[in-house]
Amino acid sequence: DFYLGLNAKEAAMETLSKLSLQGGDTCTFFMLEAKFVRTFRGKSLPFFQELRDKFTAKEPLVEVALDYADVVKGTHIETTLAVSHRWMQPDDPDPDGEQLKALKGFLNSPAGKKIERVWIDSACMPQDQPKGSRSAEDAAA
Image (cartoon, rainbow, N blue to C red):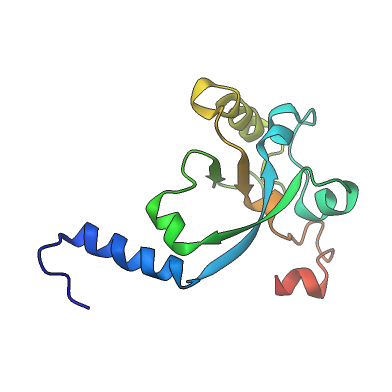
């Protein structure tokens, strides 16, 4: 389709809307409930496998399907936070708890109050920590 009279952004948004209506591409992620992160008392967040195996309620991990078009449109920008930071040690992303402290500081600030879900790799994706602990199923995820 050609979009006569529309600027590039409008054309992209129209295409993305069509994808969304047609059930376009979605990806499923595990995310942490922000409420859990805000009140977590440990020094650093546990790895994914520990969170999955230790907690049986819906909290702290929730499975969320995100539609590509909605992500591009910014639909989740006020409620979902993706965190990426350098692992401080090869086998421990946050040994001193400084990353968690900064994350909690943001989530508990006025700017972070609307955040409902947090994605952070070590807690939301299967890790091979300790070495050899990731199952074949986890490795395929």
